[in-house]
Image (cartoon, rainbow, N blue to C red; front, side, top):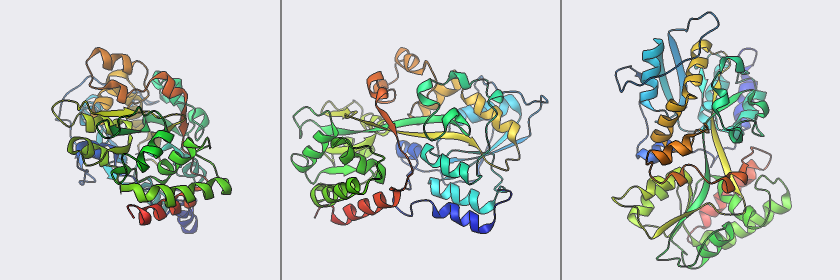
Length: 394
């Protein structure tokens, strides 16, 4: 990052909560393994697929593209097709958390060698403010208009100055109707059942914002609140009332918990819940997934171009190519989450996509999506969840 000194690079890392916010890669959750071969260059020998690419201003692309993304989070067929179409060699390295990616970009000060990175949306303002991301030239992204407006112009990047939606998801819960026989529709229902029918058989995510959001939603409080009174009340309830009833903090719980029956109530990302339901020969009839009211948490992973990118033309071409409907549909099929491109929900239903409602929520759910913010409460949320972990199952 040209112009940033070592102290400023350290300050970038210092802005990130120190614990609890690292996330297991979403695609690795689905496949059951993480990519460990960081630095593996993907060749053009896999499945061939029609693929487009934006044209560089001079009509030429660089011969190399270096992508730094979550492990196993990009369809190999799309990468292979891009290489075949353009002649660009794509080298894909992987990281396991936003913190890891930001630390590398901050420490190398624009010389990381990476062209494209994939930050989660709420980290973008901090990265932009510290000079880690380039502003996008939208004239180079002819397929940007393919995105549904619901997934552009987010609060953390107004006007998509730095980022483009890669994919997005939301959070809900799955429950075993043999254990919890009453209808369930809200976060208040979740918290109540966790202390009653499902007590000691409850799993929640390892994400502090997601866990604390359950309390805030159930009590009509903004999940991004920074008010001390709200945080104090959440800590009191979550640590002393809820935590003793919890069995696990495990973001992979739903993918194995449904087929194995190890839990009765599981907080989960929508796409992961779908994977859990599809893990057996037939979808278990005793499990239901709920997009609970009153709010719906929104997370979004994004395409961005790193400061100091050495292959910007290839980077624009790649992002633009992934925004084409066919390529985008393949991404959905591979990772199990929506890319935000228009028309994919209808195509999925037409082509017999399994459980499409768990990848493409209804308009009612979309209308109440609330994006996460990385704000002054971040360290406090980590502290609350650490205390919950210590008290869980007691």
